[in-house]
Amino acid sequence: MSEHHIRNVLEAAMLAAGKPMSANELAQLFDEDGRPDKAAIGAALAELASHYEDRAIELKETASGWRIQVRSNYAREIGRLWPERPQKYSRALLETLALIAYRQPITRAEIESVRGVAVNPNIVKTLMEREWVRVVGHRDVPGHPELLGTTKSFLDYFGLRSIDELPPLAELKAMVDLNPQLDLPVADEPALLGEPEAAASELADASEAVDAIEAVDAKA
Image (cartoon, rainbow, N blue to C red; front, side, top):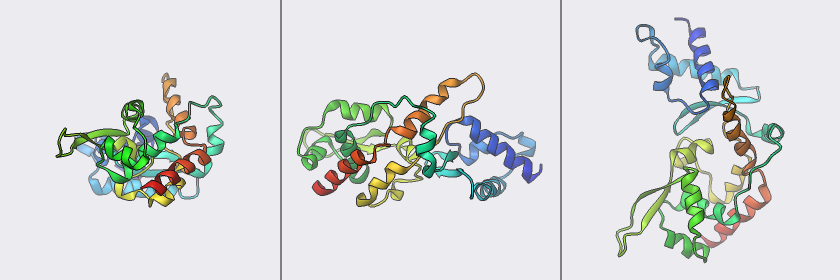
């Protein structure tokens, strides 16, 4: 099997999948008797990344695997493909998410202590429904309150491989410029167009996000 064929299969799969794919998942695309090894998959991914260096799309590794996405500096223009913008997240939600991401594992009471106000249950519910936050354990104190932490979906959305790649809190405002994966729909699946709308515009209002993040930074 040629390197060119391997590269093309990986490229087509990542464009069609609409989600990050691990190296193992990519390898499973090939027949068992001619399946490329880990080194061949890695070489093909490196070649694709190099191929996209001067283009509007890039190959990005996240917590769940590899994906092809639109570069962040084209987010504003590409976002105009979806003129109907979803409801933007509130400042309180952004503050809560920032605290969970940077202080995890953290309890609701600890979030309230930093923010100075009670945590609206709907905020945590929204973050959990978005699959950005989950319960990771319980604090060993009376009442055993839940400990909250971020998920792989959170890392995937913001294009991170691990929580260690989060920038310093003071620089978190730069994350509003991140453009998560632009899902490319396959035939007869127009529903895939919903996610890029959110990806391009949910955090597009930089001024509100920066205000929320700086408020957390001042209190933390």
